[in-house]
Length: 326
Image 1 (tube, rainbow, N blue to C red):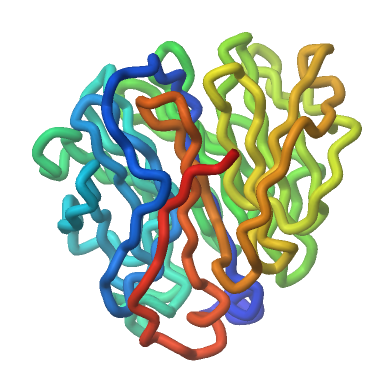
Image 2 (tube, rainbow, N blue to C red; image 1 turned 60 degrees about the vertical axis):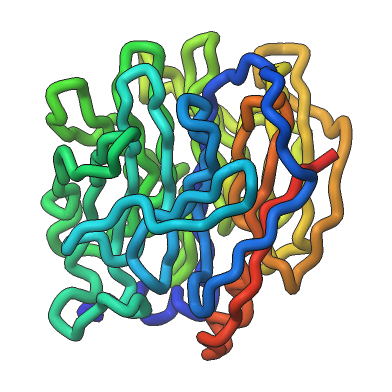
């Protein structure tokens, strides 16, 4: 990569995805744990498609989005020639679209010497068929710097927000698929050679919540006034990755394998000026949990990526899990 932050970041690679949609509890019968078997898959972002009752998750190594139904059957759902290293995924059932953030850090099967570091896009697929609808280029916002589109949130009007782990930007894509920089701030700036902004959700009260991995901070960003950015007080975790709102609008924070490999469920009594922990689940560093999804049964499920193995050079892992947290 022409950018030193890319190469250095490979040793501390972590990303996120989430969905923040509320899920009406249904009678669908989901297992407590699903096993994903596919050599070299290395999943990262996950969401639950309540319209079609299936998990959808990205593969960092294979450059595709996979589906797993409630019976545990696995299939490739969506891909494209430009989908090299998909990170966050978001199932927008209302508009029947799957939204996928995408980069190229030089470690995917689709990476080339020329492409590494040059790709920063968002892909829109039909949620029913997997057919590609649109690809939006974000690299023009960081022409001379690193970019890693990471996680996705969608507001009540259908606007898309994307974090960038290598820059100090949150991007916005409107319903016409026009992209812009929604918010930029020194508070978003990553430390040298580290990941900055990561997981993001839209809160139904009209703001964004996002985590910053390198500083282990939870930030609140106003939608009406995006220069209004505050740090949520009272949070204690390290290496935060994906975040997700549960059915009660509590926030689930996934701490990946660079931390302790746990999830923390936080609540707030003052509109996320501060937060407190109400529960935690120990998953494990080796499992390397990354992201979470609220399913239609009302429970939150976390995908375990084995990314620690991948970063150590082991591309042979074949077993991963999707598990329900307490």
